[in-house]
Structures are given as structure tokens and as C-alpha cells.
Length: 218
Image 1 (tube, rainbow, N blue to C red):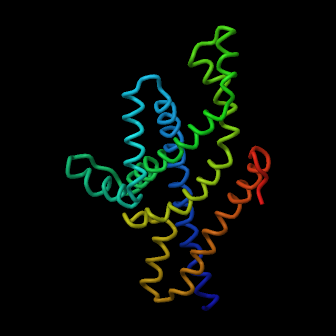
Image 2 (spheres, one colour):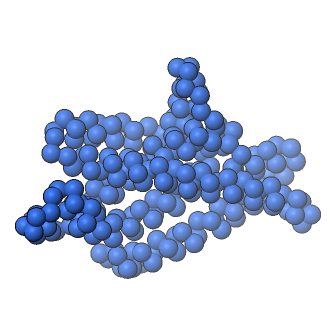
Image 3 (cartoon, rainbow, N blue to C red):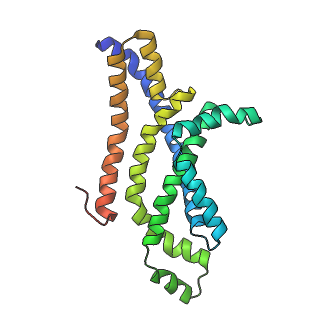
């Protein structure tokens, strides 16, 4: 391991880290919107809707994330739906993680005292207004600790985008290692990069668990 090599490699890996963050933020937003939608549909009063969403969630959770990425990136063009590698990574990971986020939100909603529904409806609030103004604010507090923990996994799984040629940090590391054969140096830097991004998120998770969790974090 030579210091001059590290100086050369770090700027390239930082560019990859920026792309990793872009991917993570992109599919964090997508998975949150879809996850909340799935959670609300799964709690619908219509059995067919509940059954359909539950089946979809179980199927998607049973598939590896990398298979979802490959399906979107390689299969969709065969039916004339073109997406870039970056778009495929955000859509695939966002859709895959939305099924996990849905269960987090559903658990948070179900943790709210049922009396809150009755109290809101007794003062004339409709079903939607009750959910938006009364239930969701309380459910979010319950869901925050597991949701933030999922965010850490999302950041790490952004590395899967390297399998469809997205130039995030892992991909940049692979290219550098392939051209220089300095595997120890390169992949140590990649590992340090992920730790530098993940550790603050893990600290945030512990803080949220202490503040909102039912049990204190160890």
C-alpha cells in the first residue's frame, strides 16, 4: 500500500460515493412513497385489495434485489421500455425496498391505540382526515427507529447498482482494482468509504431508538 496511490484513488472513489448517495436518496424517496401506499392498501376494507397487495409484497420480498435490477435493466428493453442503468437501479431497489418499508409503516399504524380512531371520528373527522392528522403522525414516531435502520441497509445495498454498470463507489473500486491490481489498497478504501457513510446513520438510528423506541438501545 503506497500513499501516492491512495492520493490518486481517493478522488475517483469520492465521485463514486457521491453517486452511491444519489442512488440511495433516489430509491429512499421512491420506497417511502410506495411503502406508505402499500401499507395503506394492505389495511384497506376491501379483501381483494388486501389480498392482492399482500401477495405482491410476499413475492417481491422473496426475490433477491439483484434479480429485480437485472429484470428491469435487461428484460424491460425487450418489451420496448428503455431505462438507463441509474434509473433501473433506483426503480429496482426502490420497488424492492418498498415492500419492507410497507411492513414498517403498517406496524407503526397498527401500534396506534384504536381509541384514537374512535375519538377522531366522534368529532366528525372522516377516514382520510383521521389517518392524515391523527394516526400517521403517531405511527411515524413508532416507525422511525426501524425505518432509519433500513436506511443504513439501503446505503449499503446501493453497491448492487455496480452489477448493472452504474459508476457508484463499488464499481469505481472494481475498475481501479482491475487496472492496477492493488486489491488490498482499493477495497480497503472502499470499505472505509462505506463505513464513513454508514456510521453516522447508525448513530442516528440509536438516537431515534432511545427517543422513540419502546426499549432502550443497548
